Length: 212
Image (cartoon, rainbow, N blue to C red):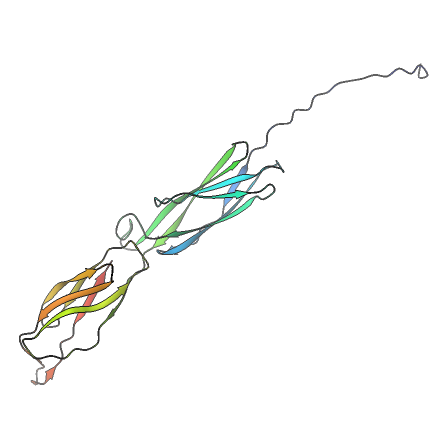
């Protein structure tokens, strides 16, 4: 009887599950030179619209991890990181190309401690040191040169260096490196003047080779 004022009640349940970060995607990381920055960009999904997230990057070079805190609603990120050297061994693991691939691991964690990770890498290549030498010198035979022959710079701030000095008279010696002052020091005595086939006096050409 529809006029009796009776009603029917039915109960239902709705289960609300916890959302988690997912679909973490990292963009390809461009190659970089030692001493320069690598840039890592990425994004992820999370249906929890009110959730904040922490993004952590591990760089594979022994330095401390980087961390970003993303407020609710932000689902993309960017890191910048300097690589001081092209590899953990001199010249990297591929001496012919002097390139080393550092592994990069990125982890996204929400404020409920749910996380997702992904890995990429960056190729860091060696950069040759730059060398400038002193100008022409003039002195008498039998005189000994004893001093700085040149200065150098290197983007690879942890690189070590060796120097070889070809004195132009058939002799070569190792140069002395001052890694703090970035100088190359050498000592050499010229017992006689230099002459060409026509017995014209000519200069000795000194060649300094710096290797990282």
